[in-house]
Length: 186
View 1 (cartoon, rainbow, N blue to C red):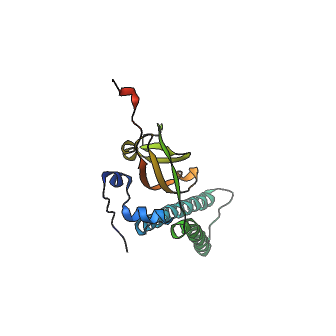
View 2: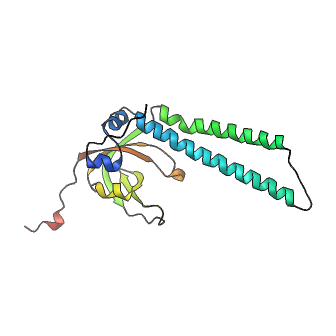
View 3: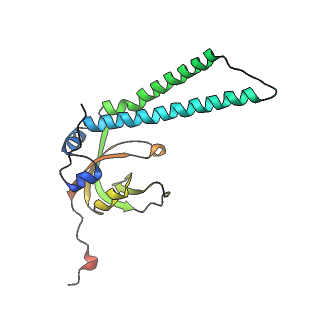
C-alpha cells in the first residue's frame, strides 16, 4: 500500500520525488505515496486543531467555575456532547480538506525559475522560488540545487498563502540556464 521513495538522481532525492510521482503528476493526480503523505499530514493538522479547541474549551469552563459571581459547574454529559460536536465538525473539515488528494487536482506551470532571498524566522529555513509567476516556498537544500534562469515544468497543489502557499510536488528541467557572459574573459 505504501510505496517507498525511489529517486534516481540527486535532484529527485533533494526535491523528494521519484519517477512514479512524476508520471502521476503529469496525469494531474497525486501518486500513491504523495496521496498518503498528504492525507497523513492533514490528519495531524486536524487532530492538533481538535486538541487546541478542546483545551481552550476546558480552560473557559475552568475559568467560569472560579469566577465569584458565576460558579458555573458544567454537567459531564454536556461536556461529552460538546466534544462529540467538535469531533464531528473536525471530521467534516478533514473530509473537505482531504478531497484534493483523491481528485485530479495537480496543476502544472512551465517557466523560468527565479530565486528570491527570503528573510524568514530562524526556525523556518525557507527560501522562495518563482516559476513563471507562481511562488513556492521550499527548504534551502532545494533552493541550492535548482538553476536560476533554467526553464522548469513544475507540478504542484494550489494552496492558500495562509497555509504556506503552493505545495511543490515535482519538477522537470526542460532547458538549462543560458551561459552567464559575466565571467567570459575571451
